[in-house]
Length: 483
Image (cartoon, rainbow, N blue to C red):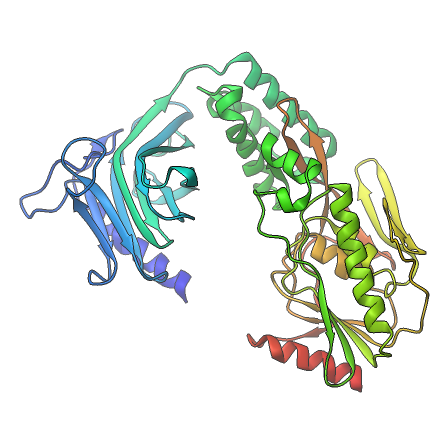
């Protein structure tokens, strides 16, 4: 419903904007200093459906230079605040356009975006792309630079730039500019680009679906003006965008800082991730053991071991209470590293080849047995015991390693998956370190369960629940266990 309203709103804004005069290849009034006869900022359309509690206006209270800036003030998350500007262009070949701006915010976790929509000579929308404004939280209350780049095809004749704020707090914007970038990339960024391209060509499971002639043709424009110091993320995004077009929504680039934090620091010190949540569990009234397995984002050995042992200890303590059945809740498990999740559940997962990775080079079976899975060996080896029914709960938020954990149970006769379809990130990713210290986490394998079924998208549960009430899914699991 909300998405439908936003789309309708965008259509209204676009129709309004095309009724305005448009300039050639440059944002109109990007410094917010010029006004029409009605007092509205020239070239800009400001949409604000609630001027009492949520404000979008031209202000003189704070600016980077000149007399005015654009001010977003949000007190309610659902408020729709959006500014937009239309301008025409004329280019003869694929060219990179950079949108840049000065911004200032007091929001600790700013949620604000630039987005551009393309239109052809008949004013038909033919695509678009956007970027979140990334700011340094330590510079709260200071003016900062933000920018994003986008490739523009010669058939594009006009664009609409949208600026919106989704988070709460204050955001000031000034000096919005557009610049064509034609400077050749330096040698290091070219080598970095070739490095990523080579990894994808060798290992990506969607390599055959990529349109390499288009990628190669677009590379010079995509890399224009970049250096390795400021452009590694942009190069990675260029290839990731093409991977998305080939239906790979799982691959990701890790900056040097993020890669070091993920692999070489205890998870508690990884400030690029949300706070660590440990597995939890309890006995339900019906004497059913309930275990919640959250996401876990680290490959640091000691952190993996601690998570797996904590989960194993939890399962063994519940086992001693002789439950009638088990509920393994993966509904909020958005992924990370599957190994400590599956290892910690070893007491409940039947031994054997539980998952097989199928890569371009062949198949790699993964075995679970006697408290061992991958590189993890549990400190307390669980004794095998008769396991009654196991209900594995899933949702659309169950993703990546959360889905792998669910797959490790599939094929056991006493198991049913109950809940919603999963996110569909059922590929196996592998880290490929890069020369700049970062890494490409590339979807390099599809996955087969213990029965040989291959997964290439969402996991569909055995019992599908459509209720938005999480208790209803749990009730369905309890009902099945007690049957």
